[in-house]
Length: 243
Image (cartoon, rainbow, N blue to C red; front, side, top):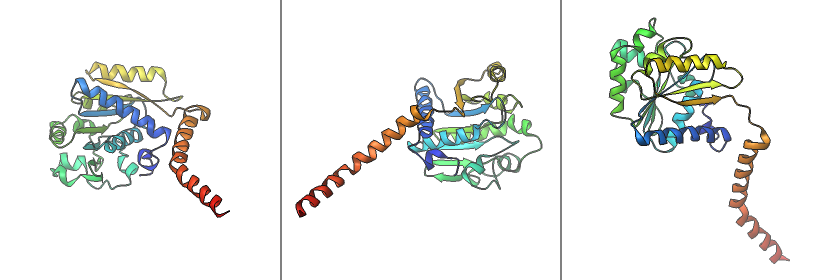
């Protein structure tokens, strides 16, 4: 789980940023049922798989029962993020009639994953199939949140098709990489099919060390010092007594 910073370094500023996204998702769920959430981007290599994996991990921290689906049938990568196998997954469920429970891989208690499985020759047909819709509906009975990693909406139509039966979409943009016109086009594509866009996540933002990072470093350093203060004082008193 080398890219899952929420697990690896839970006190880092980046982990806190993912928790802020989690908070926004939870608040979005107050007024309406938000059970299925999809992430997509305008282009390739913008970090959507890493982002959705860390959002999933942050929800798991709260004890939410969640499942992450890798529906990027062209370039699946969720299994790489968590260092798990991709021997059987969603395509095996849809094409070979596997029981989805046989394809679940558990990460921690309450946090499961179904990987892509074998890359199919016809991703768009699988995405638009009734079998995939039924799979999502079946999973709703067992999980509080279903998170879906989808291909870039600016390149193929898969994410737009998926969004027609998903409760909400997170659109990812990379700071300094994603062109404004491309993100506008991605937003327009999603809106044209009636997708509910929850918000845009800005990825790969350079944070000045003397601002946000410095604050978090100071905050947690001070926290650790406070925890150890009693032991230091006791040691000092003993040394004085010996004199």
